[in-house]
Every structure is written in structure tokens, then in C-alpha cells.
Image (cartoon, rainbow, N blue to C red; front, top):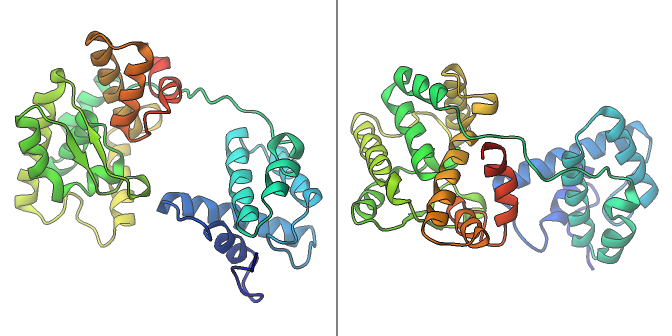
Amino acid sequence: MAKTYKQGDSTTAKFMKAALVDKGAATLTKTRMQTTFKVLEAFGKQQRWGSVDPTSLTAKQLKGFVAARVKEGISARSIQNEMSHVRRALEGVGRTEFAQDVCSNKELGVPSGSRIGSGKVVDPEVLQGALERAPADTKALIELSRSLGLREREAIQSANSLREWGRALSQGQPIIVRDGTKGGRARSVVVAPVGLERAAGAVKAALVVLVQQKQLVVSKSLKAAVEQHSDRLAKLGLKGENSCHSLRRAFAMDQYKHYLAAGCSQKVALSRTSNDLGHGDGRGRWVFNNYIRNSL
């Protein structure tokens, strides 16, 4: 396979271009891959590897990198993700067998890590306290995340969809989330009947905010908006185990219980909840472990 980069590119650039040659990636994934490759490049310089790229990286070098990351105290899940990024670059230059067999996590000595998360749904008292103190725009975003299960970016970028969502909710219909989603994949969200009133109220409140200002978070860029919103949530106490993601967990719990009450099996209930969250119907068990298990 022909190289996808120039010889004069940095090590990080070579791995990035190779990793993206066959398929794209969400913005957040690209950011994480670039971080991985920057750390790998820095380690290579420290170890005096010389010129290295996806076509010349050896298993011995990669084992040394993994061992160093373990020694630094990097979590197992983080190292697993880093090796996934490296394998993607290797596959991008045609080294698929090498990536999958010689550079498997087991062969490289990557520690195993549990896929069971430790997060819980947001503490109702913490949430209520935050809502009582939050300004109108931040309160609207909090309610959108809690009642519709939106990610931070999805809530911040929801302005163009709010009227459509309002109409759908008033008819008891699913809403379509398009902006800010991972990988740009639109999804349909079925809001449980018990949550329809709250969801409709959140949408109306957000529309009122847009009468007063052009954006739900007034900022020069999306990145700055996310940072600003996260900072505001933290000051309101929505941080740590009660971070924005705990709002999604509370929504997931509502959905899961709704589907069970409607007569669905646990497997089907988890599959539908996973779809509502934007993870796809094949990740029900993962959703249970990371969104629901610790709060039951």
C-alpha cells in the first residue's frame, strides 16, 4: 500500500494520516488519536528510536511504550484506547495482520480493564440546587440534557432543532438529534411518557433564551462554548460524579424503566435505551454497565 504521508511530516502527522486513510472519525476521536501519537512521538525521541512511522514501527518499540505507560500509572482503559489508535494507523498502511496479531493487547502486555463504569445518575438534590441557582441559559441546557439525554455538545448546538422537537413532543413523537452528535450520526430519541412534560418545558425554556440571545451559549467558537458551559456547571456543583454525563445517566434510567414497564425484556429495553443515547442497538450490555448498573 502506498504511503499516505510525506517523508518530511512529523511522526504525529504520519500516524494521523495513516489512521484516517480508510475512514473518517469524529472530532473528539481525532483529538484523542492526535494526543496518543504526540505521546508516542515524545517517547520515541526519548528512547532515540530515530525516524519512525506506521510502516517501520516494531513490536519491541510498542511493547516498550506500553510498559512505560503502565509504569506512569496510566489507566488500563486509556492504554487500550491508545493501542487501538496505533493499530488503526498500522492498518492504514496495510499492516493489518501485524496490527491484529503481533500487536494485540495481550501480546503487548496491555493490562486488562473492566468495562463496568463507576458513574451514577445525578443526585436529585445536587441537580435541584444547580437549577435554582443557574441563569436562564444554563438552566435550559441542563434541562435539555436531563430530559432528552443529550450530550454537552448536542445540547449546546440544538438551537436549529428546538422548534421541530417541540412539535414532536407535543404529539408524543420521537425527536431527531442531528447537531453535535458523535460522528455526525443523527438519531431518533423516544422520550418516555413520564418525561414528556419535562422535555417539552426544557425545549420551551431554551426557545425563550434564544429570543434574548443568538446562541444558547454565547461564545466565539464551539470549543469555547463547551469549556464555558462545563465551567458553569462545575460552579453549580455539577461536576465529578454529578457531571453533565450523570444527567444522561438519569435519562437512561428513566428510559430503561419505561421499556421494562412496557413489557420489554431486559435485553430489548437496554437495546432501545442504547439507541436513545446514540450508542446503537448492539451496545445494550455496555449501556447497562456504564449508565444504569451502579444506580439500581
